[in-house]
Image (tube, rainbow, N blue to C red):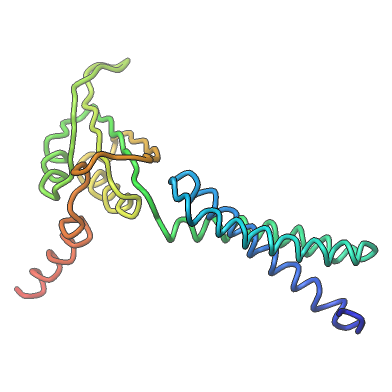
Length: 194
């Protein structure tokens, strides 16, 4: 297939590079789907991922004397990791549990989150420096940045951590139409109307 020298030196490394990007990106997405329990979609993506990898490897094995294929393979692997993470961030699938710890008064923060229909659980606790408020907040991954803006506005010195949550009981998340994003759009619309 790659007998022409110009094709061998330019097209083959490019194809190896692109196929490696594709299979590593798919591998990243497949791992995410497995961790989210998507038992039907993950195997299909795995099948395509391995098929692309086999095609790329077969071309490298046929051209063992050509170091440019190794470089293309390694560069495709690195780029595939980047694109996989980028794509996963864009998809923003799943649910997370955010824990917010603040030593300052959290009443306004809690009231604001509850006004957006978030299921906020808060408890008073103690750390090394005294009394703190611990807030537990389940939310969709795509809502993280908006919630961080609310935290920054009400309690900028608050400590927070975010962990993935695989399962969540029904009713623990706000109805999508009451999300922060919609709330922001409505606020902008009202300001423009005035």
